[in-house]
Image (cartoon, rainbow, N blue to C red; front, side):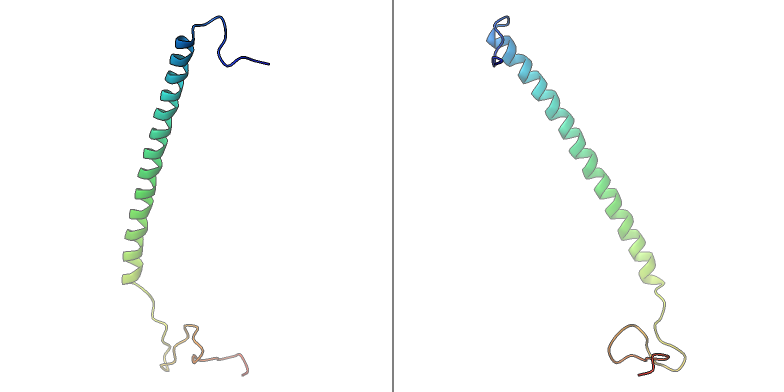
Length: 82
């Protein structure tokens, strides 16, 4: 079974090596978190801008005879045979 600390190295050298590896891993994780945060903010801002444009040019659901067909229970049912 392997030892936690190799006998060929001083324990302080092994701990420093583990510390440096852990510090590098933490730096990579922080860069990834910052990158993902920036990506989410960019996507959220693009969705807001697209929503503003589509809200201004939303099509009307009223027909020529004034009946609205937007899916409610009291809406017109042309062609359904009810």
